[in-house]
Picture 1 (cartoon, rainbow, N blue to C red):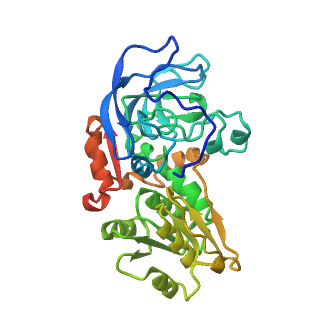
Picture 2: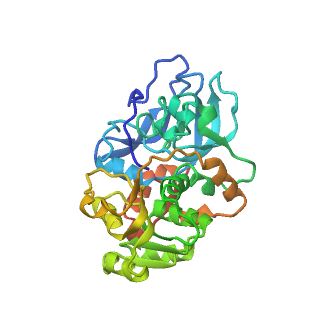
Picture 3: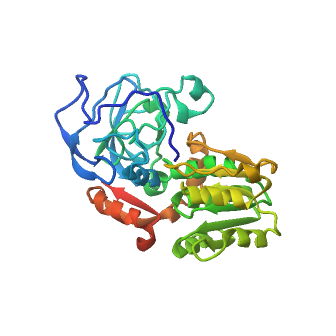
Length: 371
């Protein structure tokens, strides 16, 4: 996920509300206390604040690369005391009186993007820019790495889970699959016969790899520093792999493409070096689709790009493709379980962060936290 400024007012970071529905009960949650500081602690259990809200008891959640960016201080909108997390599945504990699509006890998938469904941006299906929502969970309001979470605009921000569905696979639909697909594959206009390069073989890069295959590109080149992730990517469908720590990526890409470069370069890391690498490997008339969360400036090399008909796209995921991706998962056309490498209890979230934050050493992609 990439980050944007949003006009929504921040929820009180101590998790308290002033409405009459708030109870005195507490819950456990993973709380951010500034760059490099987090703790598993008691927080007030959320209640219904607006009639369009639902409170969801978390069954399974995960950690996103964006959460690591938050922990580094790359997302200044996240303030001390915020409960982190924006992905998960759970059971509805309570609904506001304006919620019509869900009821207490329903099994639901939580979208990382909150949508009011009525504003100018929502009517354009740009839910990430919703005037009252967007990416607010674990950012501007308390998130999902907790025993309970309040979901605003529940009718538009939750999805019903059918009986017998694989919860762990569906957690990947909260964020990374639609992010890789929308921000990488669709923005990159991948089409049959294309040669594409995905820079970054982490979970988002792997999600782009899995969903790019819907469009039958001729070549999918994965680029990363980690041999384990690169080797895993070959089992997911990559046709070529390049370790950027030991190989000259631009030289190898040009050798593979007869000196032309790739039709689409997908940036899935979020640092200056990887974005600039995409600038160096894209072919004339090609596309650079940025997915990564950038906490620092990058250099746009207009001195070489100005005449090459290059399209550069940026986006925060809208999750408009989630219903379609839900069907592909249910029909076994795509298997998000491939992305899951580690399992923890929810109360082991501190250990899970250590594992996910040291992904190369631990050979980690996505972790699942089970309540």
